[in-house]
Image (cartoon, rainbow, N blue to C red; front, side, top):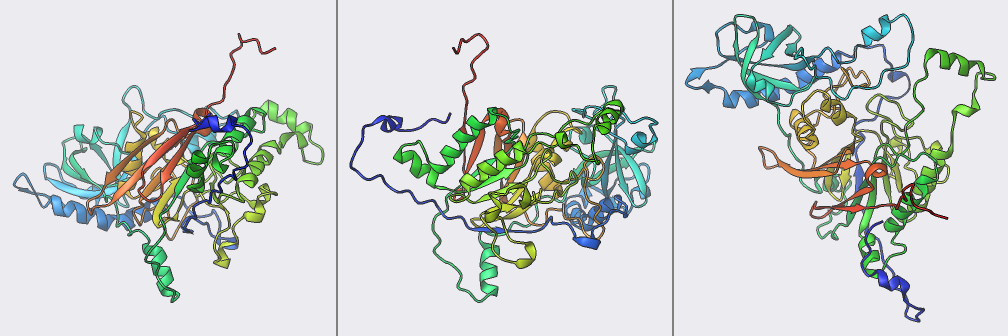
Length: 502
């Protein structure tokens, strides 16, 4: 359990001295609705998924060309020619071209292979990596004209994944492959000033811009609660609840808890669903259904436990709730918000419909990914699926490097829709990072990590990889004034089998 300063106070005798009252810091909260899907008849899946990659290339090509053109006008005293299409490169000529990276990897899942199978079998376990042990992987650069194989020691040393938009400098060899000596990416976009959007909205409505704001508090960040409805969940959730509410702590610790102005849950609040059954098991289970419904297939305990946890916190602490891979939401990104009907006790605090343009409620069930302004800072958060998928493309396990690459590629989900399910957008790619965030949070990672990266225009971004609370007992506290990070660890005593508890 968390360490408590002044725990001896809890064992003191009765006193007539009144207990001090701690007031929780207020949170300035202004969400964006970047990742909301079309509604009604406007949402359909007849369109091609490949159009998303061409949209991404069309929107980023000019930016990448500008970055590359400034550095590659002359290379080693030789003029480097820009070519418009990947198939226009010529052998022996130093040139550069912009395109989309495509990783040809035999171990990647292939939907066409799945459809061609004659029998329905249980889904194979997901691969930890797509990398071939025999070196059969190839890197390609593609645009609307075709694909060009890219090779070289430089390209092999860089983190790349399908969907990244890059400019590649090099020359074509006699085998028709493009030997790369350098690459450029779009890099971090413009970063808004703190309070920029809030003050602009106040000015538009004719209200006075706040000059002297109160110091911000702290933001508690969790992911991977993985509530299963079992009794083992109760003790860890009770410890977490008591800490966030300042219960069973000394006055000093209560003052510290009162500084927490918002709780952000980055996905996987509920435990994973049942695994896919084999064909024979599915047929046997189907025969037991009555009127097409099998009541034994539904277990309400996980959502009831999560609802109880949220309802206890909400009168005191506002919550931003993202869905994750194991939550009851659409598996394709962007995942829609968890429906308020799942939370009969907490939905009284839920946010109003987006169309109402009212201030969000204390329980803001949002999309995954999500972006918005908290205490003036721009936040970008996801439940971990994009980073977990990019991890399969690269060697090593440096999650912060992968997070940095996604921001510099200006893409929230570069591998979608190739190996990461997503909605087939046609007119725009909402996964593009149009404004550089101040804080980039990724949930459900193997361990806690954090760093600060800088951009070419002086941008500074705090990267935070948040581990699963169920596995590690870790909660992250972000100071909303300085963006400094602290960690609180919760630990539940688990007796070994050799200990006699009688």
